[in-house]
Image 1: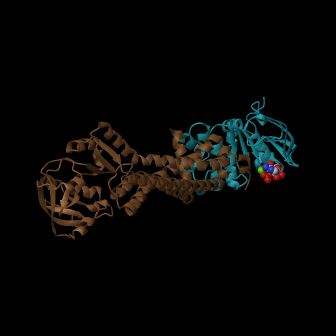
Image 2: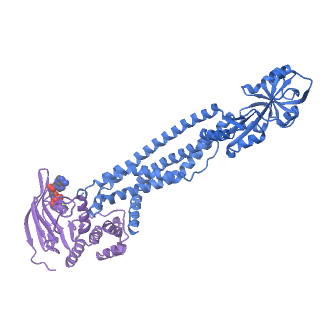
Image 3: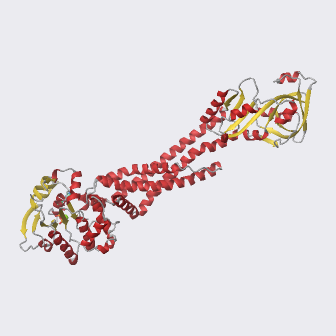
Length: 224
Length: 390
Ligand SMILES: Nc1ncnc2c1ncn2[C@@H]1O[C@H](COP(=O)(O)OP(=O)(O)OP(=O)(O)O)[C@@H](O)[C@H]1O
Ligand SMILES: [Mg+2]
C-alpha cells in the first residue's frame, strides 16, 4: 500500500478548478517534487495532503485512511501526528525563541522536551542560535528552525511548500542537504518548488498546470 | 509539569509581546476591580458609618418597665447584657419626679449626664452640662417662665408626703407641710425644640437627696449602633426575659434603613455598569489581539493545535490579566474606599481580606466572559487561508 494515494481529486472555488481530477501515488520514503506555474494548484494540493483543506471530490488516502472524509477534529490529529509542514514564509511564533518554537510543536503533539528540541536544532546546525528570537535570525536560519520544528515529532511525511523560495544559494544548499539526509533516513518528502535545481534533487517530479497533473519526470540521475 | 511550564511561557511571552495593548486591558480590569472592591467595601462599611452618623439623631431604643415596678440598675444591666456591648453607644436612665418651683408644678428628671450626652448628642445647651452636685440643667420654657439664666440659683421642692408615683395634679393640689427643698445653681439652658424644654435635669444623686429615697428609673434611652434586623433581634431577646420592655424608636431606625437601601442600590448599579464597561474594553482589546495574531493561530493549528488548545491559550492570557487586574483592583479599591470614607464620613475603614479573593474571582469571571467572543473568532481561523502567502 502506498503511503499516500490521491485519486481523482478536484478542488473547486466557484467557477475555478484549483485542482482538476488529479491522481498521484507516493510511496513510503519517496522524495517527490511538485512544479508548475503560479496558480497551478500546488499549494492547494499541499493543503489537502496536509489536512488543512478538504478536496471537493475524490479520495485522499493517507496510510489507507481517506482524509477527505474525516472531521476537522480528526484532521487536526492526523496533521499533528503524521505530518511535518515547512512553509515558504517560515512562520515562526515571533515572541518565542528558536528552541521554544520547536517545543511548540512538541507541546501540541505530546510533551515539550528541551533536550530533544536542542538536538533537532543541532541537526540543522543551529544549536548556538537556540535562544534567539526569530527577528534575530537570518531567513535561512529561520527556515532551518522551521525544518527542525517539522521534524521534531518524527512525521511520516514532510510537506514543504517552496522551502527555498526566500533563500539565497548557500542557504538553499544547506536546506537541500538536510532534505537529502532526511531522505536517506527514510522520511517521505513532498517539496513544491519553482526551482528546477531543487526539483532535480528529488526522485520524481510531477508538474501541475491549471490544476491538472500534466507531466511526471523520473530523475534518472538520482543517487541516494 | 513541563506542559504547564510551556503553557505559562507561551501566554506570558505573548502578553509581554503586546505590552501596551495588554496594559490597557489590565488597566480596564484593574479599574473595574477597584470600583468593585471599593464600593463593596463601602457597601459593607457604610451601614456602620451611617449608624454612627444616625446615632447623632438620638436614642433608637427605649427601655420601660415591663410591670408596674420601676427599672433598677439590675434590670437595666441585665437587659443591656443582651446587647453586644461594643454596639452600645450610650444608655441613659431617667428618673422622673414631680417637683414644684415657686409653688408651680414641674417634672424634674434625674439623669446620668454623661450618658445623656451620648444618647442625645443633638441637645443644644446654652451654658454647660451639669458636672457636679447642686448643678441643674433647665429647659428653655422653664427658664423663660422664671426668667432664669446661667449662674442663677433656684430651688426645687419635693413633697415627701405625696404617695409614691405622685402625679403632676396631686403635686399641684396636695402641697403638704412635709416637704424637702434643695437649692440648685443653673449651669445650662436646654434647647431641643421638643418637650424636653419643659423639664429640669439634675443628677441621679441629687434626685436621691431631694426625694430622700433611692427609687428606680422610669425609662432608659439607648443609642445602639446596629442595623434594623440586629436591633429587632436585641429587642426581642430583651422582651423575652420580662423585667424590661424594650422597643425601637421607629422614626430613627426607619430613616436609617431608607437611606441605606437607596445607597446600596446605587452601589450595586454603579458596580454593574462599571463591570459591563470593563467587559466591553477587554473584549475589544482581545478582539484586536486575535486579529493581530491570525497568522500565529493559523500556524498553531497547522502544527496540530486543537480548538481546545487555542481556547486554553487565549483564555489563559485573559484570565491571567483578570487575576492580576483583580489583585491590583482589590488593593486600589481599599485605598479608594478609604479615601471616600475619609472624605464623606471622616473615619477610616477596615481592610476586608475576604474581598481580595472575591475581587479576583469576579475579575477573572468578567474577563473570561469578555474573552468568549474573541476566542470564538480565534477558533474559526482556517489554517490553510492564513498560511497562504502574504
Ligand atoms: N481560498 C481560495 N478561494 C478562491 N480561490 C482560491 C483559494 N485558494 C486558492 N485559490 C485559487 O486556486 C488557484 C490555485 O492556487 P494555489 O495557491 O494552489 O496556487 P500555487 O500553485 O500554489 O501558486 P504559487 O506558485 O503562486 O504559490 C489560484 O488560481 C488561486 O487563486
Ligand atoms: Mg503556492
